[in-house]
Image 1 (cartoon, rainbow, N blue to C red):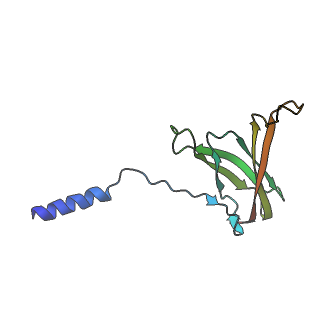
Image 2 (cartoon, rainbow, N blue to C red; image 1 turned 180 degrees about the vertical axis):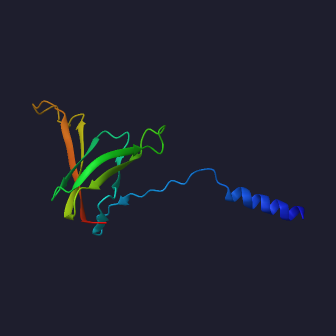
Image 3 (tube, helix red, strand yellow; image 1 turned 45 degrees about the horizontal axis):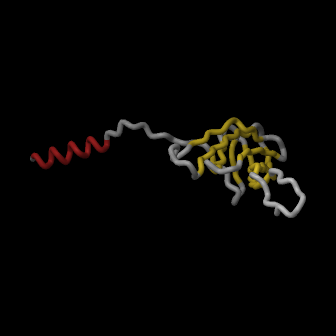
Length: 146
């Protein structure tokens, strides 16, 4: 009888979880397949950027039909006390009207390098150089009515 009571108490306690479950209703966009979404959906791109690196990262977007609007972004750092690594970036969008569009994300990384090495025998001034790169991701999105 005592064993049964203990088993029931453990089952009741494990079933009673006071932590609310977070439901993420956002639609993650994929570059691998066509994304089919509806008006009223919130879309999200999950990406990341280097933390503690020598370069800066910025994002920009183009939309072939102008029907997708960026609404904001969130970033989180899984290890705020770590000097290096990366942080997560979530960029949110909403569709404004129906249609099929191509959304391009440009991830621009740039840095000012200390200088390039020039041997002393050459009469050149050492100047800082800019290291620059752009990564492009393409998302095909079809927006439908509800």
